[in-house]
Image (cartoon, rainbow, N blue to C red; front, side, top):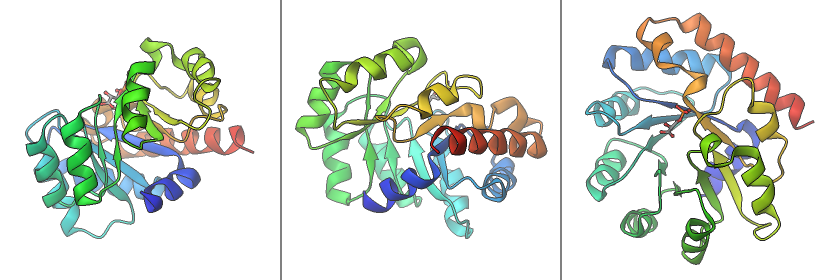
Length: 212
Ligand code: 3PG
């Protein structure tokens, strides 16, 4: 977990993407890397996730590649075989938690409640995905949860945009930000790499100035 957490501290942003056409994965990853992004999360929301990970495994990007929306052991297993370097789940799944621990791969379970925090924390987790962030209370939720759970850090994901990013990044219990806003699916499908680079540049600037 250390390498993942340490890199997250510095780079903070995790673009979350679902790959519809596999021919987009290389130019997309190149664009993100050139823009200064250090993470990419490929979601298991369609049948291309494993293959997209496999393609990236064969290429030498200087980006930490992970698999998201992991809901089953089969997906976790495939993702690791295909080179995923971290796993993310939308919720709390005990089987996946134990599997990830056995495989010694960084894993970030998702929560949206005190119950989720308690369950994940009782398994030793102090870095959690807060999902779906905006609709579950967003910045207000994170501020309220800091009192009872000061040591727990979150990666809010779901509904984050360039417009609200700044409010999240300023919170002491936010350890990183995930979202598709960094590489929106319409821009990926239209191969608008320059526009994606521009969004990432803006997001990086927001993070840098919010954390000064
Ligand atoms: C995820 O899978 O983590 C989320 O769907 C990302 O949410 P967003 O599209 O609102 O950023």
